[in-house]
Amino acid sequence: MALEVVERLLRLACSWPEGRNRLRYWIGVYLLPYSFAFTIVLPAACFAAGMHASAMDRVDLLTDGVATSLCFVKLRCLQRHASTLLEVRRLLRDHFTPLEETVVMEAREANKRCERRAGRLAIGYVALYSSLSICGSIIMFFSLISGKPEDRRLTTKAPQAFLHNDYLFWPVLCGISVELYIFPIATGTFDALFLTLSLHLVCKCNILWVLLRRAQATDHANAPNRIRDCVIYHQLIIRLHKLTEGIFSGVTLYQMIYILFGVGTPGIRILNGSLNGDTSKTLFAISYVWWNICQLLTFCWFGDKVAKMSLDLSDGAFWTFEPWQQRSGHHLHLMMLRAQKPLYLTAGRFTNLTLRLCLDIMKRSYSLYSAMNRIKTA
Image (tube, rainbow, N blue to C red):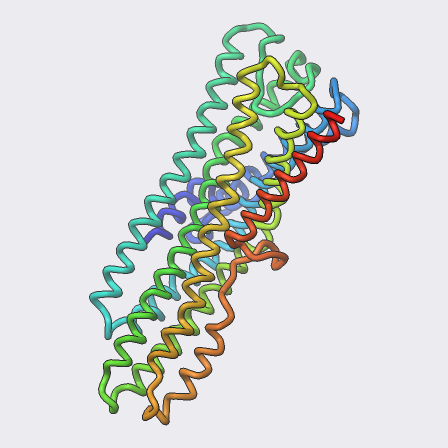
C-alpha cells in the first residue's frame, strides 16, 4: 500500500509508534522536531535584537521563521497522528474490502491504480524535497572548505556575528544539518500523505459508483442487501474523510498563511527595487513565488477532486432508486441527502480547499501587487 511508503519514511525519523523503544522515542519526539528551533529561534532573536541591515532583511528573517516553524508543525502532526494512520490502514483493509466482493475485479483494478499513483507521488515528493536539502548541504560545504569566516554560508538568514564566531557558528551548523536530514521526511511525507489520502477518497467514491450501478442491475430479492452495502460503504467514506480532515485541517491553515508570506515577500522585493540589477536574486524570487503557487494549486486541486466526486454520489444514488424498492428506498433517500453535502477538505475549518480558493488567492494577490505598484509610481 502507498501508506507503507509513508510508514517507512516516518520510521527514518523515529516517528512511527510501532516498534519504537525509549531511545527512538526520545529522538523522534524531542531531538529531531526541536532541531528546527535553530532556524526558528535564530531569526526570532535577530528580529528582536534588531540585528538586520534593512527592513527587507527583517521580512526575510520573519519568512525564514514561518517556513521553519511550518516544518516543525508538520513533523509533530505526523507523530501525533501516526496512530490515526494505523486506523486508516485498518479501515481500508478490514472494512472497505469485504464490501467490494460483488465488484471485486473493478475494485481491485481501481485500488491498484490508486496505489501506484499514490506511491509514485509519495516517492516523488520526498525526492523533490531531498534535492533541496542536498543543494543546501552542498552550498554550506563549499563555503566551509574555503577556510575563511567571511565566506561561510547557512541555509537561513544569519547576522555576521553568528558566522564569524566559531562558538556560535558550529552549533548552529550542526543543528541546521540535522534539519536538512529531517526536512524531506517532515515536509515531503506530509504533502505526500495528503495526496495519498485524497486519492484514496476519490478511489472509494469511484468504487461506490460501481456498487450503485451493480445494485441497480441486481434482481429484486438481492437488491436490498446490495443497497444496504452501498449505504454502509458511503458511511465508511465519510469516516475516512473525517480521519483525513482531522489530520490535515489545522496544518493546512498554517500552510496557507505561509504561502501568503512566500508569495508576498518576493513581491515586496520587486517593488522596493532591492532586486534591480541582480539576475540571480530575481530568478530565485520568481522561482520561490511559483514554488508556493504550485503548493497552493496542489492542495486545492486534490481537495476539489474529493469534493466533486463525493457530490456526484448523490446522482448515482438517485439513478439507482426504483419504485419497487420499498424496503431499501429510505436508505437511498438518506444517502442522497447526505451526498448532497460535499466532503470538503478544509484549512482549519476556515475555508475549503478548492480551485476557487486558489483562483481567489491569485486574483487578490495580483490586485494587491498592482495597487502597491501604482502607489510606488504615483
